[in-house]
Image (cartoon, rainbow, N blue to C red; front, side, top):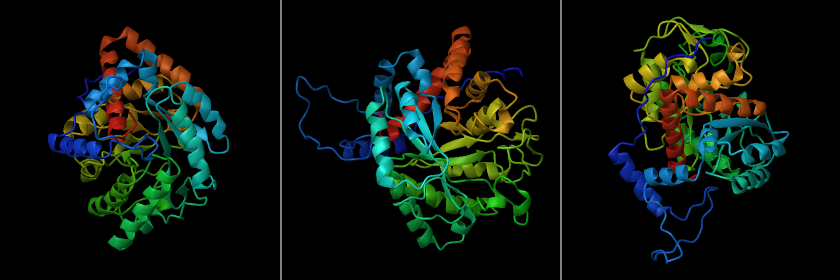
Length: 398
């Protein structure tokens, strides 16, 4: 399959007002370590042997980039799966300088025990601190359920809770993940499933993963989850742009899934950017479905029309776009492993998610090879690395 055209992406710059708020917060929280614990803070200036830390997110990114060679920079664009029943396998990925780890599967391991593992990974990280991610939605999609993690109702049930109860649930969700050293939740689902179609919507409605049947309902409920996670220092992920609420097939186990209804100006698309327009700076996950009325030529996460023209240019999103799984999903099975990463980044993506640890090396090699051969793609990679590291700076991971 041909590699799509390479878009020129806009730099991921924060609005001035938000930047001011974040800089104030950074100054107040300068004693926070990457693992979320507190360190003593001196109120005096640096001594002659103690260099002053960079004072803005951009400066911290510049400092981080200066300490990474090209391969190490590219490795920051990958979040790779680690099975929860084999957490020791994550050590090699950490040594390889990967940008983050995704805890795959289901586990009843207590939060305290998980934190011992995640803190070990953070201590061993050779470069910037890691994203440590899970799928912690509720209902059938709850990765962690051991001591320290409450059972979460489905998103559909969450959306029906009184506002105060949902706020408390969101706070507990964020606190429990932070206690385990988790700093990235691949939730909440921002897809809108029209009322009466739930049972026929295989990936979302059939499992009650939607927060409502209208954009307004989804924004209100999912926004509460985003805020609760952010208050605990956990970054949220809005999924699955442009939306899986109208499909019938599941991209996890179906090779080709189409949405023949959604258009580029559909109100459900604005749900993602409305929720993303906050100091919490959630990520947006790109869908594996094909949107016939936006770009019928390829899956959304490989489409420059979907990710660059619509999400970034039309809707103005300049933050992190993370892929849906590029490792095991049936929807990408006919694309060479390395090409999956190249095509996603070329389309306008930022972080490549793969549940297959063996994908890391061929994906990094493919990105490096394409960047070495194509200066325009190399500039796209540069922009993606900066966007990824800016997100880490905001999250206290630099």
